[in-house]
Amino acid sequence: MNLSLTGKTAVICGASQGLGLASAKELALLGASCILLARNEQSLSAAVASLDTTQGQRHNYFVTDFNKPENVKATIQAITDGQIVHILVNNTGGPSGGPILAAEGGAFIKAFEMHVVCNQILAQAVEPGMKASGYGRIIQVISTSVKTPLKNLGVSNTIRAAVASWAKTLATELAPFGITVNNVLPGSMTTDRLRSIFKTNAEMRGVPVESVAEEWRLEIPMQRFGDPAEFGAAVAFLASPAASYITGINLPVDGGKTPSL
Image (cartoon, rainbow, N blue to C red; front, side, top):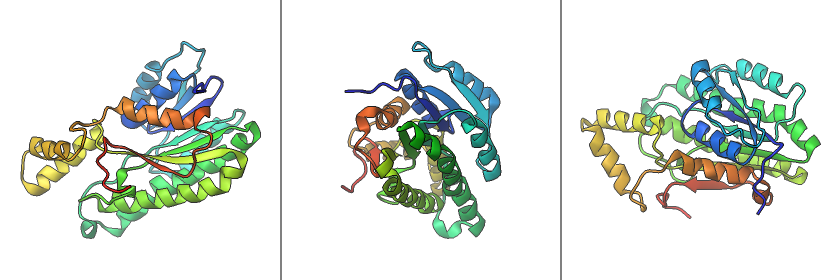
């Protein structure tokens, strides 16, 4: 099985921590040179220093803000000026939790810009190079809410579904060029995002955070939360040559929790 990414360049969004950083680490272990994007330069610098370099990889980072699509556009243009991006991992922090009727209209617009519009900007920028090189992987980090909406995540459920539909459309359009487009759907992974969801749920219900966490854990068939490295491994596989005939899918990495097929 060919898993080597030696000589390939990957751009990973939201990569200063959590699932983005976990994905970057696994891509680097397969030989990819990684370019990390996020807002916090100090965290980005530390993240780059944590990546494997034993195969001659050359890692870098760019500070950018996904709240500002024009900022993202300028960043990716600077990256693609003179080099080809073979792998793009779209990953942006999810919207705040809460019932859908409690959300203001602006929350949907902001989330749409951060997730759909920014993904579009990035894909448009890297697509020419992928076509020219004959190798391309575009991977979205979304949520299992794509398959079954999650409680008290109204805005997130809505926008995640929009991203999945965007990606499926893109997968069909790029398939003739050998460029794959896939979504990886994290379940309950041990990240700051999950801890934030637990806190929001606990405050809404007036119960301890630990009680909410235990309820969620017991709903997982594997009876444990996922390690970000396990998620990163799925991303890295889809980015590899071994996954060349897999496109347009939604892959849950959730310990079996998602109830749908």
